[in-house]
View 1 (spheres, rainbow, N blue to C red):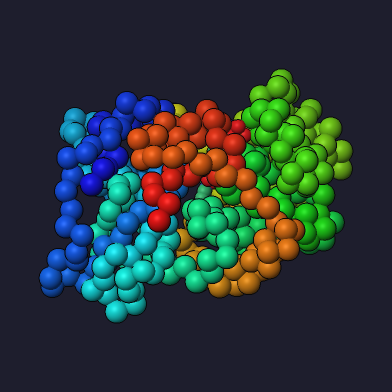
View 2 (cartoon, rainbow, N blue to C red):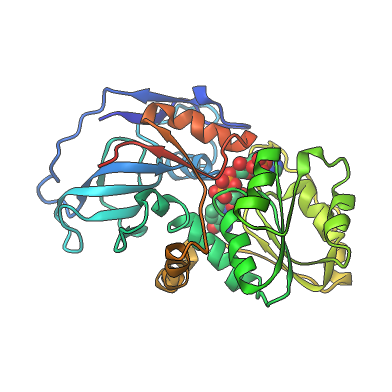
Length: 340
Ligand code: NDP
């Protein structure tokens, strides 16, 4: 049972060498007697920016500076096929998405975040992205947190990524003016041409983010969907419209800093009476059926498209994950473990 294992506790930016691929793990392809678990074959694994931090917290606690991680596979989201089940809700042959291990086969005994896949007329990998955790994050953040209306002027950072590309398309379908920022010309072209954003810009080539935002939002930003935090958030605060809304979804620019940057322009929240709210997607999984009802028909009709960046083989998982922090991924970063 090939597995991706954390070699060192990660402080600062994760490196490929913080993980290794082991071929020593063995697993019986049967659920042990007396367990109510399921045995799955992992098909696709999802690279999510906050994944390693969750692994650190889950397994190792806060103060882990002087110890070594246990030899267990990384925990993350994935799509898998049930090979054996002692659980009444799952049977052999079912397809599932949710929390699994970064390994070929996993014994799952915690079912809090594990969903049976009902619709298979889409690529299965979509359940790591548009139809999985990032998809419902986009839906929740936009509809539940931003209170959007037709005509709103919407700005999205890390806009070509797993979450951002769906936020932008949902906003366009509602009739909003949508601008995204991303870190390369290729991504900017993707946003404008394939994902049909009204405008997009490369934030790495903008010496003055405030001036860039003023160029695209001369009358101010109505909704900001924040995936990055830091300097971009600070510049956005200077450009919000009165009564604007900010959904704080993620702060990828801050995750790997030992000391997060300060945000200086918070006073503009008062002056412009802006609402700002963070959210964690796992509190909104009850909305999943409603989310599917909205998004599945749009996918079938080609009104919503989704860009994926799929690497083949568990061995490439560590590099794919680390690449999220330099923007190496173009679209949702997925690791293909097995096609069936
Ligand atoms: P992406 O697919 O967008 O991948 C991450 C992207 O972030 C990179 O491709 C890169 O794009 C950008 N990035 C990396 N480093 C920086 C930096 N220092 N400054 C600005 N941008 C950077 O990831 P997701 O769509 O999966 O996640 C987007 C955000 O949403 C993350 O912050 C994530 O943690 C958060 N999230 C929050 C959830 C919640 O429950 N609140 C649930 C899921 C995700 P580029 O080339 O454009 O720089």
